[in-house]
Each structure stands twice: as structure tokens, then as C-alpha cells.
Length: 185
Image (cartoon, rainbow, N blue to C red; front, side):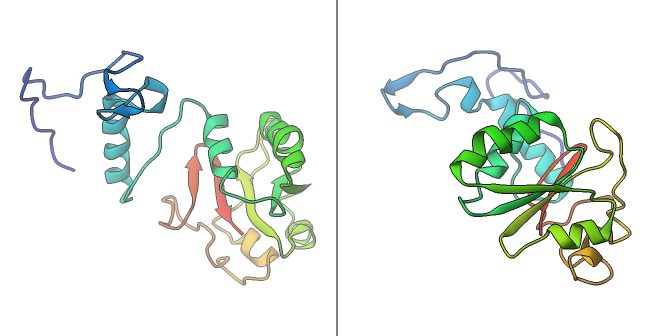
């Protein structure tokens, strides 16, 4: 990663923090770049570009909260798709699936993700995500991702196919938000 080129206007060598909420639009619905801070701003764009470069990725999306990140990721699924959750998943995640996305048609089940037999029995043809939080919240269970437990449980042998097996995420992991990993099943 290279150093930032100084700002032409002010000469700043670090990205300034832009705290404004709204941006000038020449006409309604035609912003120059951003229209409102929640949709994006220069500071967040610089952070996303820097993090993508550090992780070797093409793009990064930063969110104001873990729930915003989870909601965005889960909305990439369709009614009829299935998500497998830990039996001690964070309560906000459970409520998002049971109260909001469940009525929309997204199916989910919970199981003990530390037990390969439990995972194998819960995975079905419609399963798109196995939602792993390790350590889990609130009981701090550890899912040994590197040991390939999930892959073996899903019938993918040692290493688990597309499963993450190192400290850095593979390029095809759809989202990472510490301590939550969400990988396609």
C-alpha cells in the first residue's frame, strides 16, 4: 500500500474526517458523488479503499454496525433459501432472521456448530450460509474452522471445500465482520 497523495486544495497528507450529513445536489436525485452521509462520504470511501487494499480484495463495504452488515449480507439471499445458525447465535441475529427475514420467506435452523453430526443433519439442499460466530456470543463456544469441522460435516472432506482454513479470509468468503464469519455452505 502506498502513501496518500497530498490534497490539492489543502495539502493534507491524511484523509480528513468529513462530518457533514448532506451534500449539494445540482438537482433532486442527481448528487455529485454523495447525497447523504449514511449513503457514503469521502472518509468512509477512503477507509473502504484502504481496507480492501490491505486485505487483497477488490472492494470493501464498511457499515455503522454489525447488524447493518448482517442485514445487507442476508438480503443477498432469496425467499426459500436456508441459513444454518449456531444454537447460541447472537440474539440480534436470531431476531433478524425470526422476526424480519423469516416472514419474508428466508428459512433458518439452529444447531451445535461444534458437532459435525449436528451440522451434517441440519444442512439441506437450500442451505446457502452456515453462519459462524467464533467465539460465539453469548456462551463463547469455539468452532474450529481451521480443523475443517464444518467441511467434514457437510460432506466436503478435510479442509471443507470453500471453507476458510487460515487466518486471512479467502477471496470468495462473502463477508467478514469480527468475530462473525459468514461463508457460503
